[in-house]
Image 1 (cartoon, helix red, strand yellow):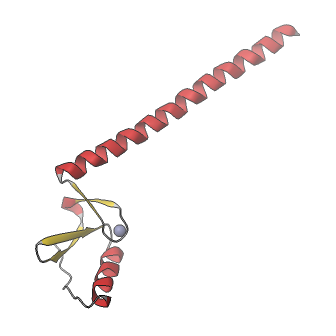
Image 2 (cartoon, protein in one colour):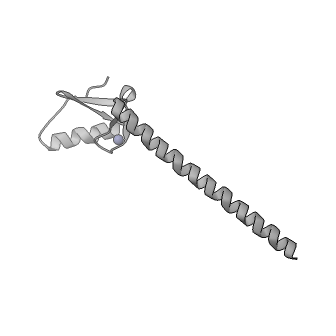
Image 3 (cartoon, protein in one colour):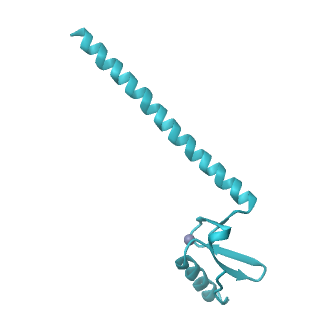
Length: 98
Ligand SMILES: [Zn+2]
């Protein structure tokens, strides 16, 4: 009977060890992704969508030129919302695809 208890306990300890390890790995990869995103932003490979705040790749994004600045968006929906906001603010920019 005691044998069974020890087995169950050992199994539980092992389970906890693996569970902890798994959670730790998940957390680490999340931090790596954040660091990778930061690196790409610093390198100019990623830019922030001014409408929803998502990061978009410079070479595969929907963009609108605003004078010297180019705003990039994750979707046409975000671009349209952004243009709408500009219009409401009394400014208008022609949509421009690249
Ligand atoms: Zn967006």
